[in-house]
Length: 154
Image 1: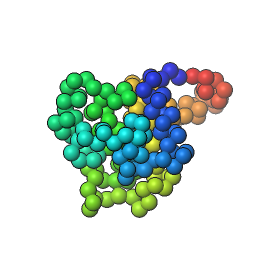
Image 2: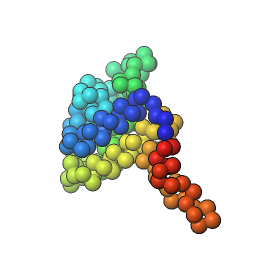
Image 3: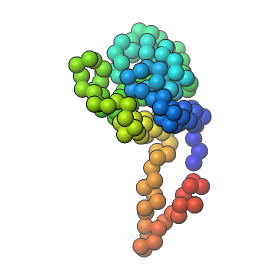
Image 4: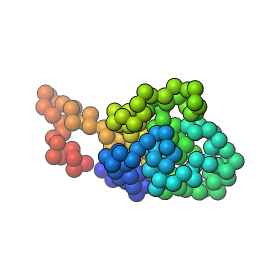
């Protein structure tokens, strides 16, 4: 499957962060966006509330200038972060009294967040979800339509 460069880079960074225990939804340098943006926190100044889709003045300026951060616009960055936080069990925008998962760093919670982010990243690039293996289970006349070897070559 052909992917965009930004998607490929994001997937590699998220994969490495997950497997190296460097993914943390409560740290803006180690969350999904923080990892995609090379563990920098400057992106947090695009919005006044963490987990909000509302760009602030700085965010709107960057958006209107067509600024991209590792290929992603300010609006896309906020979408990615919101999806990640919500899939991890946080109520957004983040606030000290809003719901949050009991163990936000558990592998299960982080995996749920990553699956949601990867689905969104693929949507942003108008590509099929790279994690969708449902075609492996398609049948025609009781026989599989695809075989693992041919499917992985797609």
